[in-house]
Amino acid sequence: MQERFRHNHAAGSSHGRPMAVAAVARSDDWRTALDSLLHTTLDGQTTAPDLVVIFPSSVYADDYPDLIRATWQRSGAGCLIGSSSRGVIAGSVCYESEPSISMLALWLPGATLTPVRLHQSMLDAFDGPDLQDGLYGPPLAETRGWILFADPYRMDAQDAVRRLRSRYPGVPVVGALASTLKQDRQVWVFFDDQVFDEGGVALAIGGPYDLQVVVSQGGDPIGEPWTITGAERNLITSISNRPAVDVMRETIDALPKDVGLEVERNLMLGFPVDEYQEQFHRGDFVIRGLLGVDEERGALVVGSLPRRGQTVQFQLRDAGSSALDLQQVLVDARALVGESDVVAGMICTCKGRGTAMFGRPDHDARAVRAAFRDLPLAGMFSFGEIGPVRGVPALNGFAMSLGLIVHRDESSPKPGGHPRASG
Image (tube, rainbow, N blue to C red):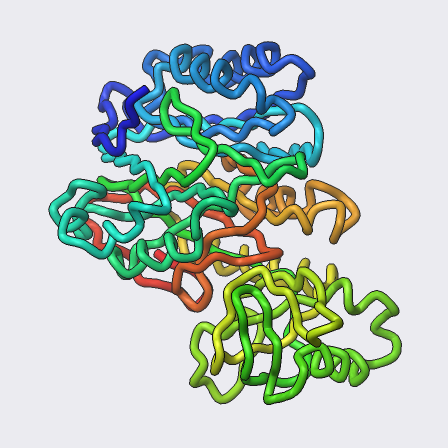
């Protein structure tokens, strides 16, 4: 089957005003779940949606080709994108590990939707003239936001985000790393009626719409900032010319005794966006997971590719401070959109949040719905969350990323950014 690397879809104007419907369905049979979703999202509509974003549980992975083809054909959507997921979200309903599908159907009159199929081998094209000429993406002036889903195993998603923000400076990006319940490092992304087991899919949004994105992080900085003096692939071998493990344990030992006995399993690493700041605080870091330690080498195994000379500071996961941070982020988001017409929201929250952090799967989704009542909201539990850190699109860990599609008067200027949002 020939891949469609790109097509422009100008959303139809027969639907009078922008709208969206989010839905979730749970069933052992994907056909039953899809029937319920399409009934909820499409019944009573006089036109097909311009965009469908879909997150089916990886329980259905063997049936993905049939599931996605049926969704594409029966919805009549102008564009379809999505990814596999270990858990799904719609409204305030969350299923972390059950056979289920969430879907967001959008009618966006006047929008220009430009999907782009990504491969690891084609990322270099984002730095070349072809992209500028519109072969792989729309011109900067016509792009109001990107939605990106990527395979964390067979494509460098961090590099994909970096190249997008380099080519489209100031344009917000939201999305996630595809996830799965299985342990075989296999995930999938969806593009119209096709299923891909590698790479990614990105969608550029243009026309009278803005994409506002906020990120809530799951950790607080502890100890002090350090300089990495030894790094090999995803290992930090030395910090300030000492074994990295020794610095980590020294940081843990300096914590108050009442912090708890399981500090090490709740540690993460933060890499500052701006290394020239005099002081660093929550929200200044791109967060990465601490995957383990190599005792023999005294090294830390990191969910990133650290480099020598880079600043790093340990971070501690904490449910209480993370909940407070989320509340503040949502207050910021409300102020950011003001009285604008928020059409829909897409939420990507780390698999390490939900029940693992808060004792309940729906913590993040309920907080969003409390801040934006009746907002059509859909998303998934992900392996990494794409959103801004100090206004710069980044790949985050243990975070919640929320993208809001906002309809605006075409005569209004593009809104400015926010310290913890991009737009």
